[in-house]
Image 1 (spheres, rainbow, N blue to C red):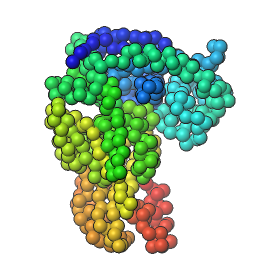
Image 2 (cartoon, rainbow, N blue to C red):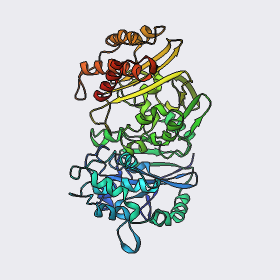
Image 3 (cartoon, one colour):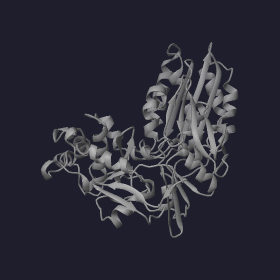
Image 4 (cartoon, one colour):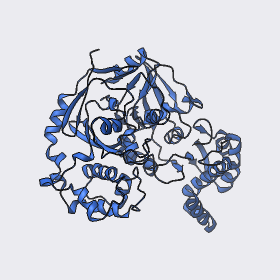
Amino acid sequence: MTTRQQLKFLLNDQMLELENVPATQTLLDYLRLERTLTGTKEGCAEGDCGACTVLVGRMDNGRVKYESVNSCIRFVASLDGCHIVTIEHLKGKDGELHPIQQAMVTHHGSQCGFCTPGFVMSLYAMWMNEIEPDVALVERYLQGNLCRCTGYAPIVKAALDITANGKLEDDFLIAERESILAQLSQIQDDMIVEISDGNEQFFAPATRDQFATIYAANPEATIVAGSTDVGLWVTKQMRDISPVIFASRLRDFRNIEVSDNSIKVDGGASYSDLLETIDEYLPELSQFWRRIGGEQVRNMGTVGGNMANGSPIGDTPPPLIALGATLTLRKGDERRTIDLEKFFVDYGKQDREKGEFVETIEIPLPAEDQIFAAYKISKRRDEDISAVCAAISATIDDGRIKDIRIAFGGMAATPKRASAVENALIGAPWSERSIMDAKQLFANDYKPLSDWRASADYRLSVAQNLLERFYLEHADENSFSLDDLARAATLEAVL
């Protein structure tokens, strides 16, 4: 396999080739300390506040696709072949403010100003991808940005008024897209980027076959896909993660295939990559999916990484377990397929050998007679880690529960099914009495911990309430009593 020792990317309007790049150097540090582009701010250094937001453009089916990312946890080494756009590069016609900047001025969308560049860049990502957004869409794009001054209302007003200050077709990135596309095309190749800097080493392969070969030969290496978790290992825990293999450059590792019965997702597909497919084929997950992190995190984080990380509070394992998803693990040229629920062995331990990675996830689509729902309980509605995450899938036949799968995150050392509750419900009448009796058995399935997100008692109560909520949401409308409706409304308000 051919290698090169230079990292190549376009920064604003300058093509760069870097040789001595530390594997753990964040894009934020590089921009501020080496390029003196200080408009990008450090607020939290963990991808939570959005002050460090920049755009990253990558080649996608013959075009350049721009997405907002958190530069504080994005590593420079992951950016080969990309176009990075910072706040300093924004411009309007004839030296005027960019339409987004002008809208922020007009509507007083900035007070102290610290968070403002991040907000502008998040709105710029929206501007590049949407036409005439409504309030809900604006709020989605701003989920990953925090402001302590304005109360957000002026920023939302500015976002809705961008087109009053300019047209998208006149935007400089649109006007220069052919030149940008040509420059990025020139630096795309099949070589493996391999750079060593002192004690740190990283690889950035171009294809999944290269990735599999390198990882099999370096089984102790740290795989970095979206870096939404690994980034914090570096910025908060100061961990040594070298050698590193970056998966973000793989051009054949983001595929999504839909068949009659399932969705097959490559491990490198991001949450954002999958959103359109979720909306079309799994609409029960649409609202849930939009509560995974903020927009920047969804653009960076990968579904395969969420599986491989094995966190007991990861958002995607419970719904995928409830749907009966399977993983295909690959080591070199060898592959094996296992049920997702069996992948999680213990806290911090998964059924994954050294040198083995999550290549694909296959998600069965619900049958016509199958009901399904997923719930995320967190202190903050948007951009927060779950205290409890739940998913329930059930098949009802002739008034009885033919099959049911109940999976929770945040209730045990791993994402885990509620087997005692399931066994009590299978074959039972689809009735409130069955649900009320069975939910008492959650105490047999789970022994949750108390931490700063929630107490053990709260988690257990939430689990019971979510099962009841699932029933109330999906029971036959004709069977509802006024008490049922009142209780459903109360649960909705509480949860």
